Image (tube, rainbow, N blue to C red):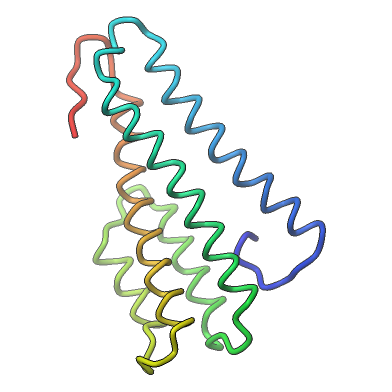
Length: 150
């Protein structure tokens, strides 16, 4: 829904709502760990995770802005985006499987700056999402005596 090419007030509101839900949910998970006094010594890792969430939010917004201002999008873009989102939902996904999907919209013309920028942002989003998912999974398993390291 965030990456649909429509521009309506409802889409804008939905976009803001989804971003705030994602950010709120993940930030609350991180803060819940931080609030435990024995886990506060892991401040640097938790700050890293908070910054990851903010980066993800920023990249989602930039991808949406690029799509809204891109008049000649590739015809297969909606299908590829759906494949990417479906793959990102899989808990066992990896960079290789995502790269196989991303290659379908790799810019053939090196002078098409929008296409290249979009592709680079989308790839960055996928890599950040994978990294963030791994860290959030570690966060779910943490207890006061376990190690949480970068």
